[in-house]
Length: 361
Image (tube, rainbow, N blue to C red; front, side, top):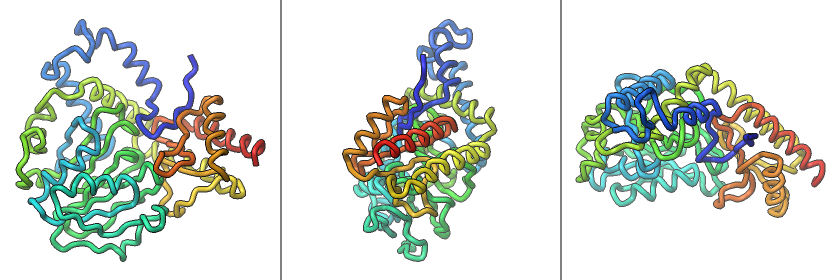
């Protein structure tokens, strides 16, 4: 069997060693006589798996005791609806910065519950840049400020946490969590679907400052209450145990590889290779995102025509380079270079780009 290089934006490539370990343990796990997907989530065996996953994630990212960690189902989009329910009074103002598709999606989920104030938007410029901080129209009484740390579709990334004063900063880190060191203490909430850098689809990490759990929020069912999930160690209902287990294995792998500092180095190296190929192509390949905010995780680019875009994707797939078609919202090509993508994958993509241009330029 030969595994291809998978550039999918999510669900995304996972470390081969993690997949092989999961394969080996699938039928009989840890001497219990059954698969981990067959044992109770309340058993001592699985509770130990869950506790280790949290401890390892805290070590990997540097999560202080001031923040609780939740492992939830539903994806990041579900969290976008739960955040205002838990952190804002009915109709209270909440500030949103829009830097791409997922920022707009966050607003769509929040509008039924809060008075959304768009502090700034990059849409008029095609989401090719992040509006300058001086342009933001922040509210004085906002429940929180929401940003998207990395826009998976448009390839725009924050390089640091913006200063928003004393208002809690909430960030969707779905496509860049654990890709480099971050100061968790600067955020009220960090949330991320696991299926890009932390594990498989089907489980979402929510890192929330404990004092924010004390907010009354809005009337909501117990299952939608972060406080209840925190009080029950994310086992208020039956959690996605297989996904949680795989997340734990992936985090262990990242720690063994050198942690976020090492992945920051690798990710910078991989993305620099691909951007150099784009910028050095004489305009055959184009990425129009402002250089200061170019994403290391998701690199969108276009060729001179839609016909060439389609040919590039088809020929790349035949060459063992998968899932390079851009999102339907923007078209073109997109290469996602998450933590589990090896340097050899970026090198293979760059070599293919050079060959394709030579044959079609």
